[in-house]
Length: 563
Image (tube, rainbow, N blue to C red):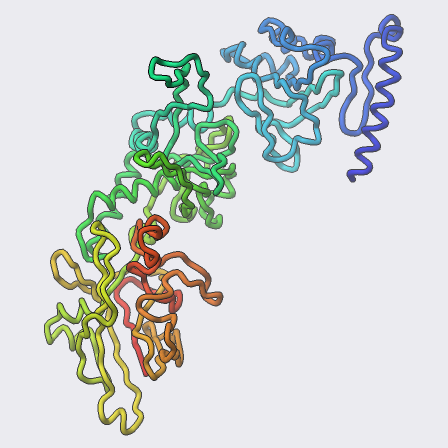
């Protein structure tokens, strides 16, 4: 296809040479001529002469002339004009003529071959008009391309519908009424103004020898602006350069979703909800409502598959150290069957599309980052009755806590010290004599270090990563069960440095279970601490990934260890 296309273009260029050479004579006798190719019509003059020469374009020609659009073109330049026939122009109504005219002109000559899905045609208005494919037809914005004319200084695209002056994603956000003020406030909470040195002009030196700038102040969003790992801009909601989808939740939906999540914490995590929990849910909500691509109704219908919000790296500015780093973020996962939208509310915007939400829920995995139990804490806090209820030992005896199976680990005065006490037991004499299976079954229990109280686990149904840690260098193998499912069989603990040691393997990848970086306390990033202590990667880890387990219904679970 490429070869044929190039041959067509070559033939067109040769024809243009002949037309231009004879232009004066042809103008005298016939006026300017059009030449047809499969891809477009060729006009022997410039774009202005073409537009003014077509009777069906007289209204757009008058508008472009009146607004000075032709004055800013030259025969040697390169331009793209978007035009409409007179019948369409009658529907212009109260649209600002200066803005509409500016949206009809780009100071770049855009070849039709570049008009592919997702391409943005940047206009004098400062907005992009995006190319879409609708029902197999190439469109500018949402209107079909009717005719393409190549002129001596660019292209003229005739469109089959008036492209309105659409607000951008960010414009639409700021135009929302008071019913959506909570969402607007959440987004703006993370905005800050800053001195944009790169776009400011030096204008002198002060008495102290410091450069004085004609300062340009700009705005950034410290939560949502996205970069590459090398610090190149990847996405922001304020720029016309990025196509996006905006989900708009009402105040009522936001308040209901956050309150429901907060109410779940005592039931699922055995503790009181905090302001930090609320802030986490609010951050997730903001992240989830922006997607860095255009989503059509079929993409967001309840039957559609899951997708992710805008990903990339977040810029972390340490003003105390005058340092900038870029940290990878986990994009929010959106499930259209849960986070539902009003499909009829779709609103086309200059750089994307917006939908109003009809249902919003903070996902369970956001509410429950991890449920971690240290057996020595549980055992030490239990009464004798609780011990026999929650731990059921078969052929094990002499259960006890052994302190300091490994030296304690203090990474910082601001972080809790990690203690490596372990709950132990030994096989009974009968088990040793007759090689009996030794088994302990444990029901999920949580220990609240603030109240020093226990609560039974009550988790929502779903899938979870199960990680466990044991003392290594033991001369036997174990099996691990979750409810009625055998997860691990004959796992050897003899090896020094076993993956299932309680202080190792927190973020190890397992090919047969998939990979995950879940393994540290929520909000903890070992990279921030590694220069202080090379063992930071082992701080408060979750142990090795046993499996991804399924809790078929809400409630508790049972883990069984056999040897």
